[in-house]
Length: 619
Image (cartoon, rainbow, N blue to C red; front, side, top):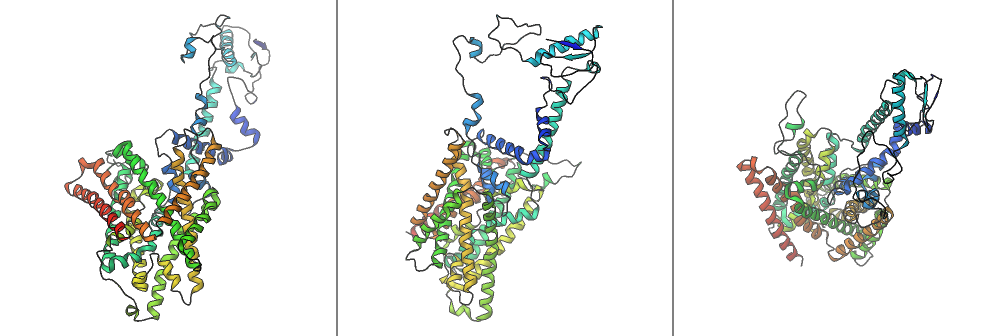
């Protein structure tokens, strides 16, 4: 019912009509929350939920890119870690709006088939059209509004317009405007607010890293637990063999890192040609679209089948790394507690120790654990080098007390695998590339990173092998602890640090592996509570599976060599070169093609022959 009253006043603030809904802003005003405050809580959660929902719409493994980022940064804040370790959403939660509702027998056929009947402008509702929904009150009020405008323009009565619900007041000065002008103004205001929130979200969730930070992150990935076995590489391959294996594989993975950056950029030319163009300059056109993830790169080059195969290798490598961490943790525990009869008993104890930290998804704890590995890397390099310097200064003729090998061909397969595992950080390259403030500096960052890593690896390898000779253990920190004399406290502290490092790396590596497995179950589970239970079950399963592998293959050098020969050769050597040929083969020179084929064929031969030789030697 429409009624008119003689009152020419105008009020926008109190308007709550069906035509102009102000619930969003009103709610903010009522609670006193500013847009910034709203973003810090609800908006961030909504953004994370949108990311999780988007993952469900993409093919497996959509969670790899998010999960692997927990390994890309040495020090991360709690909010980022919570986002990286969040379990994938359940499809049923997002499909609720599409749930099929059974129809009644009297429901028209066109409704059952999902058709929508179009109504003309002069359509009227009557009792015979019961199958068609009644329009909302707001639409009726809009029609009354238009009728009132016509009455005013034709010389009718002026005044306030009150709808059947009495929600809004309109002044005669506004009658010349569109009936939806306030709604449009509110929508524009809401969109502007959402845009501001989105920009704020990008600043927090997509924090860009500087050149130094990216160099540090990449170096931290490469100088991991595998660096502990480099002196053992010189033991098995000798001075000459160990040096050339270390330098050779470093140069190969150095080049394939270039390949990955250019493949992600979508063009075989250097990255700085595209991102370094100044305003007004014409940047060259890319051959292909840009890619943001490792599985996405495999899908672009080799289709869905190639993506699944490469992703399987990546997840198998993560599982193998869990076993390596358990073996390292058990070996260092056995050094501190030598009364335990076998090191395997301490490996079992290590498996029990990592259960709480792996199951409890505590962002604050994980942020501390992410910093432990960075500290351990620096401490290990300094400890080995300083120990060698102290030993050289105190014992002049140390070479006569140790036995060394000049060269050994028999130990090359094992050495190749250990060094390949040490330089296997290519799965993190897409995350680091996307996080750079200045992507044009990517290749220069790779140069600095590999220069630092090669120097550090050679220092550790040469110092460790020079100190202990052929008696060096497969982890140089164990040799330091066994041979410590006057610095027992310091060496024990180093051993405890390595125990903490192995445990922290086990926990952090567990999350991307578990996320990939949970993603395959998103279509089966009914709700988020079931996903949380499955998350714990999956992690316990991988803990016991990795523990079984560690007990069956208790040798640190054998495990690292096998993972390096099988997984690292595929991920860090063969795949980047083969994808380079597949994506840009038509525009590559003959020399570039020859280098790519050399890397593919050479990497395949090393992987196959090295695996067979290593298995035979350790059978």
